[in-house]
Image (cartoon, rainbow, N blue to C red; front, side, top):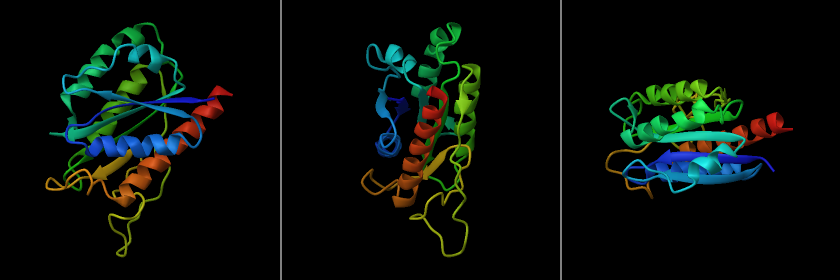
Length: 189
């Protein structure tokens, strides 16, 4: 069965909720495992070895000050060992992020993930979703924030994780997870 690794950092719980939605979507088509980066920027023991066995790696982090959290960057720096061995080459990749603002420069975080994936020789998969951009659309609609390179979510600064990300952002994350799992299965076949 196709294996999907979801590597993410969450500062306040909102990104965990988004990561779980990505996992739920991927799990419809593959074995999907969450790898949470802790507050010190570390993964659990043996996580890097397990990630190397995956067919797809999905990256996630909140967007802080126009980029991923430093904890995620620490993971990215630690990925130089698999990079040197080309252990992630030809694996499918994708990403997701959220911030309190509607824009919040979230694309810069997705672009960071994309660059990381390209350094590893991975194959990037975006959302493949049309935006919900009519007057009638809002936060409960799929791809309301119009993310094409990755799943974008909005978690207002005064919202608890049980309030945000909202329904549409979580469904967008589920659809991204499913698309990446489907794509990885095609490459693994």
